[in-house]
Length: 324
Ligand SMILES: [Zn+2]
Image (tube, rainbow, N blue to C red; front, side, top):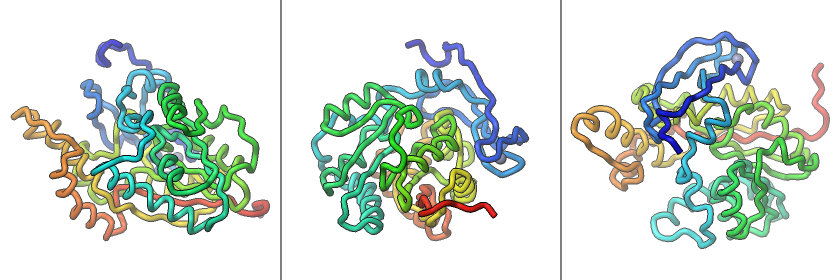
């Protein structure tokens, strides 16, 4: 593949996914810090409902082809069937155990039919497979990743959910972890999830929080922009509104206390801001030093109810919704 800066990028201008408005104002411009190309990307804010989104954006086909490398961080463990070991085991448990507990609190020890949409390397499904006897399924658009996860023993379909044609009311729970901000049409995805959930079924979402306290501190270096792969930039309010439009009832929000986002912030500043550019410094966002240094800062974010990682749960109501 040619370097990104030599590709001929085709751009499209989306409308707001929440309200369909094309009235927008420029909010911030930033760069791709994962695959540096020198290209600037822009985030706008809908003047009618407040949803922020990347605009213009590369057309979806090129976005997938050019901006998701094979070693993208969500793909790296796809073929690995063995449980994580050492430090990876601690992070795996820290990330997935709370998800498991929230689902268990809802469904108890009953058999649960769960679909993980955009499962990537399926770390959540693998964790639940070791922990439960639930009926687990994933759907992943990247063919190489989907095949590797299948070879590791999981039930994963390749494609996007809207093309799968699953039966209506066939799942108790759907998980969308760090997916909704990547998709072309998040409203359509939520409507399809609503259709395939059983009444009383739940949707668990996780996204970066555009309302995080530290976003103002780090400016264009804030980790959660992740341009151009993040197309939509949610706050609790804009996400709740999008889900309500698909028929869901909000069950509340919480903020994860985790070290990753702050370590990303620091590494982006060091590697791409001053002094990294001047002195040629490079530091990994997986550095234990950065992860430890980030903890107290994320604790402050969470304490003020403005953490980096937003979790929201939604329910498909039992019975028909009456718009009186
Ligand atoms: Zn809008």
